[in-house]
Amino acid sequence: MTFINYASKEINCKIVYYGPGLGGKTTNLSYIYNKTAPEAKGKMISLATETDRTLFFDFLPLDLGTIRGFTTRFHLYTVPGQVFYDASRKLILKGVDGVVFVADSQTERMEANIESVRNLEQNLLEHGFDLATIPYALQFNKRDLPEVLPTDEMYRILNYKREPTFEAVATGGIGVFDTLKSVAKQILIELRKK
Amino acid sequence: MITSSANLVLHEEDFHQLSESLRRLRMDANAKAVFLIDKNGQSIATAGDVDQFDTLSLASLAAGNVAATDGLAKLVGEREFSVLFHEGEQDHIHLSIVAQRGILVVIFDDRSSLGLVRLRVKRANAELEKVFESMLQKGEGGGAGGRTSPFSEITDEDIDALFT
Image 1 (cartoon, helix red, strand yellow):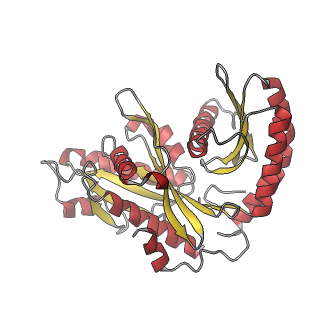
Image 2 (image 1 turned 90 degrees about the horizontal axis):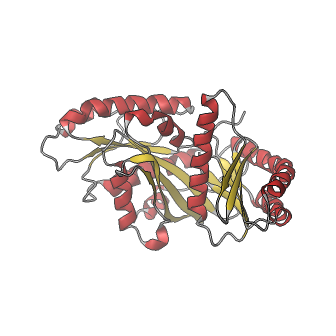
Image 3 (image 1 turned 60 degrees about the vertical axis):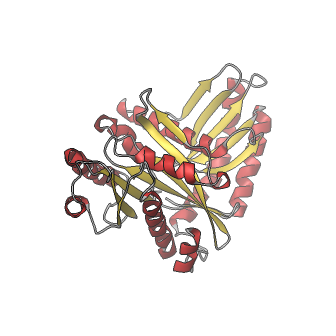
């Protein structure tokens, strides 16, 4: 749900980073936060457990600049990836404009990836959204680790609708901004259609 | 019914009305600051001494707070808990739901009281609801709320320029 504010000339959009636990969603946001100029970002908020696992969400407001005189602001959120936090995960999807799925490339995490995509599809439906039509980008993270599945195989297993797909090493920033740009662009194109 | 996927469109006339209502509420309740945000965490209008607060973070956390409480309400068979109150040593936060889609956040200290805030919020609610409902209806009508959207003519170049 895009918020168009004619009074302050702002468009606000919400992007949610989804995926299995320990896949690198928070790392994506931290990298974006660290590499963005101070004037273009707000405070990054992490509601995490004492062991740094996301408990509720991470939040990062980001200004991308102006478009037709309107400041374009994206609110980036992550969900808690661990299976048992499903109730919280569902809440974060409220009013979402676009989703980034951060998949863990390690072979042993493929089941968790598949389950998380199914969970995303289901939770979106509960908010009246369809994964088949919502702006969506897929990221294969942790490509630098030794036991990873080949990308073509991951694509075959996880790609839902030929969405733009990116290889990434979020700790080093590889693929992080490309993924963000892809989903942000899709959201703005949707806005044009409305 | 207003769906969660409808765009929220805020035009200047609505903004001024909302701001005026918030300004009055802040004075009547003797509060430090008042914020109206939507349930998805976007700040809509504010009044009072808001510069000392990080509005973006406040909006996002208040929305998360209300969302979690809504989840709890459903667990016990309630439609919603319409009022939340957080009591601090000096500052206190009163959160209430407006028109099912908005959250009114009042921050106050010991120069006011919970009773006064509750009373004034109740009064302001009816007024805010009217404006908020009309705003949501406009959002239902399309991206720009019945007006020609400034985004209908954005080009691929405009979009690309954001990322250079």
